[in-house]
Image 1 (cartoon, rainbow, N blue to C red):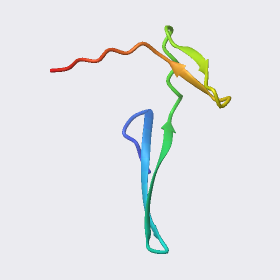
Image 2 (image 1 turned 180 degrees about the vertical axis):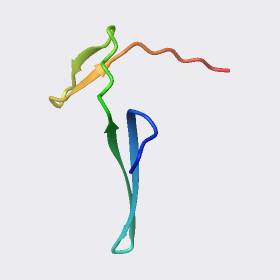
Image 3 (image 1 turned 90 degrees about the horizontal axis):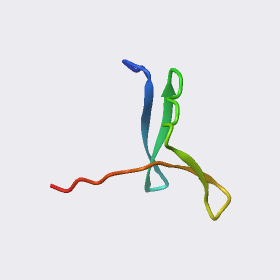
Length: 61
């Protein structure tokens, strides 16, 4: 796998096992990971994990 520039990419994998089709996307980071935005905060999930919460805006045309 080659990337033209640093960033996060996804390797899409498709497989057929015992007649069932499966798909998975594997994240691949090239170069240094991007820093989290200054206005982002980490929030605990009910199952003990964590997510980065950031402001978002939706535009509907």
